[in-house]
Length: 398
Image (tube, rainbow, N blue to C red; front, side):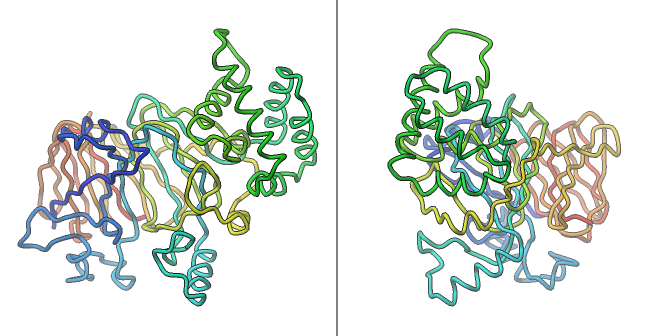
């Protein structure tokens, strides 16, 4: 069964006013449109286009879990959430828990009587939230995972050479000297205080001065440009300096990142299609007015320095790319429209057309035009896609 679904973009302040509407051929609302959710997450479940079938995707699934979820019926939930994300300003620095951390944190806060919607609550459900994102804009900027301390020290050294006020930077270099310094360094910065405030102000000032200079190429130009933007939007926030501890990456259209549990990250600017486990568990680490629980964040973070976590797709056939992370909850398939393609479902799926039009066929069929989406039940089996449009298919892993 193919069921037409739609939704209204979420109006987070950091969202673009035009990117999602331009991509899908919709009328813009006039306000920020940050995320379009396609799924059954209770925070914003997709609406059903045919009211005779039901009001939303949650209602449809609850009416017949066996048919709508197939092998995932015992859980009673669609395990993934597909999104379009359009960032016109940086999101908060954040990380997500493992399954065990989510279950324990959810239980602990429930037993403590913390209301589910309390602003200081960390765990809204029992699930992890690994995620992948594929760039749809020409470029997509992000911070993701901790860089090596050697690289961080090089950046600080560059800044130190541009000021007479070296004491805050000398202190920072001393703290970053041990090879196991990352946890203590992030804790010190996150907790703030007079010394951290002075450091953040100095780094912000030096980065802004570097950006104003008309010299190219510059060492760590992208990193210092990011610091300048963050300092302007979040003056005095320790996340301004913490951002220099993370890998800075610019994706090109079609490139992808996979962000597992514990990975510190922040999307900075751009449009992408995002797929994740259906969860709302976020531990924030700065660049936000929202609650930052430093001890819990430190427990969740993976402090192992890693290269940029690109996710290379499988290419089983011409015009088909399969982004398959190491989790069972989701797989993202892109059909670029250059040739007919197909994919065998192992569970429920959602398809979104982002350009042109396409024919989807399994046991039954559906036609998608740019901006339209369908929920697909597992009994459709092998879903074929033809017609020349770009289609993203989110489904479960094997």
